[in-house]
Length: 361
Figure 1 (spheres, one colour):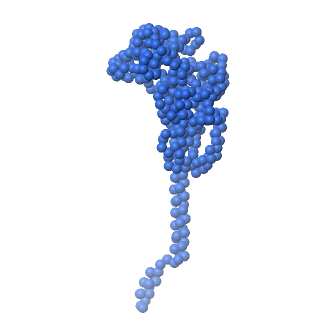
Figure 2 (cartoon, rainbow, N blue to C red):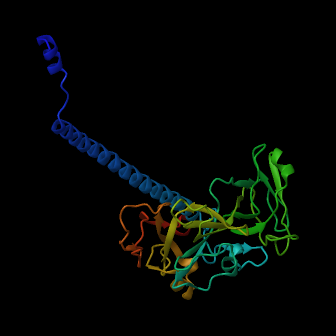
Figure 3 (cartoon, one colour):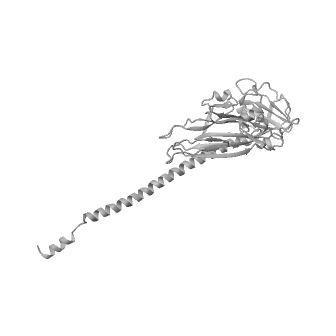
């Protein structure tokens, strides 16, 4: 073998086993670091997503309930002052839950699988019915987003109610309130679709057919030209099992449900797990809260007409049970403690207080 061949062979030598093992070890360490970063990023992303969903659900639930509470008991310019104000509920069964418009807010205290006062048949027979150990709130209110109208002429008690509106504007609703500074009357009517195109609409008091209907075609009061006419509803909020399909590795959890008037229950916000409510009662007539009480205490004292404020707490949980940590926390919803749940759901607690504007001004 000549000298040139020996030199070429020396230059073609490969890595030693030691060098290969060192290179592999360094590569594995590098890959482990990259995988740790990726895994941490994924955990952070999922955690942020769970928190964001909870925040979104909590804000949406609050906004929905608070919007109805702020308009509860709307009397127009007629203020609920004894001796200076008259309210006439012309509907049949005016003391039943869907049509008791003289009580702006009422509720049911849920505890140990039962409610106090006893849950109304409308709710106990609902599908789904309210879940135990959660409060239920009932709000009689003018619904946000629905138009309000003014009468175009003086209205006698037995007159049809003629209202002005813009051309093409629809008159929505089946129950209404008409009020001026002398009083108000609640009544049922079925607006005619033929009126939608014109600049006026005629509301006739409905006395036949399915509820809601009126006892008679008489408002029991006269109203001045320009009296306000507004659609009004009873809205019930409660917690029940969600009808939303279960998320992978989880069950179909709880949700916030709503009943408007005598319509069927509808699921509005999935993931709302607990709801606790207290009512601010004005006991001396100065429109300032003297005490906050649960629904059973307010009902026992017949103080629903003196409620001027509401405290609300809700607990929202994530759709998926994929939190890396077990939820061992105890959550305080106003005066009630719930938990620990000992599961892998992420939970967020929301608490607020809202004044009933129409009871304090």
